[in-house]
Image (cartoon, one colour):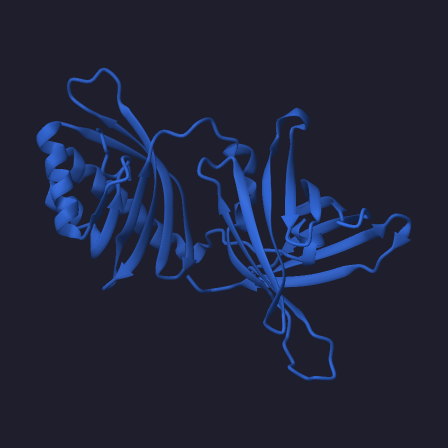
Length: 307
């Protein structure tokens, strides 16, 4: 993670939304297992034990180091560690886990940074990593690790309160299939961090009766001049939405303004609340096109549990 140090308003677009994937108390024991794995990794690395390190991966796991080299399978991973320790005897590593989340009960995504100290070098080698863990025969093992160089400064501290947006989600609407009823748009949304946690990136696809009607991308970031969280959304129909985010009384609000392709401007206020079961409700009020008032909207979404 540098575990092998290389050493060498979507809503305005089509009511797109998402729901929390924050860790629940039910994942406490699993999270502890992931952290224990990191401690085991650190100890094995500092002891120069290449075989023990490789055994932390599933048999067919992979590691991509900072140079882009790929090692697949325990034998190749062990060989890479062996080479590292032969060239840098006495190397040690420190691991700082920044986040662990569970998109599936048997899948965990870990992100963090590493600092590797090499004998004979004045400065330690920094890096960052993303790791995918899977339950394998009852144990949490590494499936894939992707290392990278040290990251530039990040606005993560300003955005981490929005990490409940992470994951894959679908609007929670009943499908009747009756021909005499209006077709219901189905919207899939995914959300991930940018490489250095400076932005949350949300992507959506809207379909009606299986046909794609709109797609788009939203970037959520910290706007330093105003000390605000803002978002910018661009959709395939040519619309652009800007949003101003704020937390109030345990709920999030987003004041939006959408510029339509035809030149009209739509404004609204979105309020997001999250139930204990994770289902999220978005209420859109004060919708206007110029001076024309539009009806309020309420949509719920739920996790799309497919990894």
